[in-house]
Length: 413
Image 1: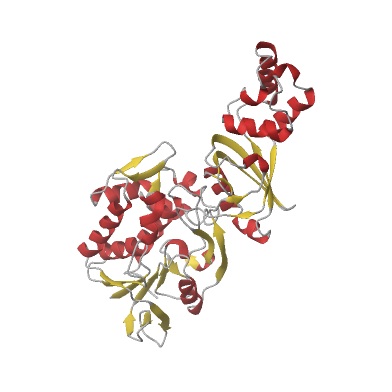
Image 2: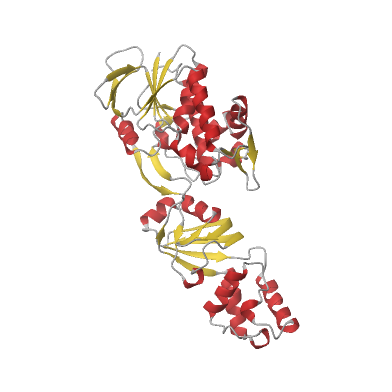
């Protein structure tokens, strides 16, 4: 049996390896259009590769996928982060867990992951074809007893295959292949991005971070989304895990609103307004002569405290003894219900993820085989599945490609 894997990313390599391990007699060829396979693996996690999350309950794991959470429940019961850890350990790579739950190779180098994947492809006799762009894929349905496909390469070479595994990620060419073979493509829009916010409170504060905030994003009149977690002020606005999660869950609605929305931030989610007021009252009593701008009474960065004091209009020389009731109320509002206008989207430098792709109802998630075109399989980001930041998108790739690879050699039309 001849099997073609189209796409040399994480899902492509893992799928080819799983196929080779499951079906020793199969001849597996992996086609990658560029000369640099596993490019996203290399840059992930700032070059360290966030392999997977330390989330080992399949039901909980699914909750980190804005699209695909229902479909992945079964696959995650068969191959989840524990299986990913085991696979890489068996192939000489030890992973470590960081405080935020992300897992990286102990080497802190993505080349460790790349080397393990490439070694495993060679060990399983996978024929890797780099710089080989696939031009078209046609299904041969002329009465053959098993599925058959004609793959045409960019140099017009034609190769016959019995099975196809599409792992082309968010490449438009991959969507074209799927559409030509009968599939519906859900329109793709960006997911996992930062927010562009032009606001005086954030000026000259790039790099200031908050350990935990509550975010509420109002997108027009249609939808309000909420997330909690760390946040970061950047040169162009706001970023950090909480913001990226919001961007993923609101990806399609934000696209439709042209990335215009209203963001409400509670910088002190663990403090009630009354406790903040009490902290200010204590300052008035104990430190009346201290200047407000330089005497931060709450658990936020000092630079941001100074910024909101200025934003409210409190003079730099004003002391606690002279603060007005109106100013106190304004400070509490800025700390617990600060409103920011989102004016666009930035990027997430470590990875680019889209929502959209092959319609999930057209795929059998027990095997990852197409319900429309027998012999055609899918894995990874080509599907309308995307996860939040933290290794979840790679886990989708490992899981779906593992299932596809273990099924592709035994499928029947």
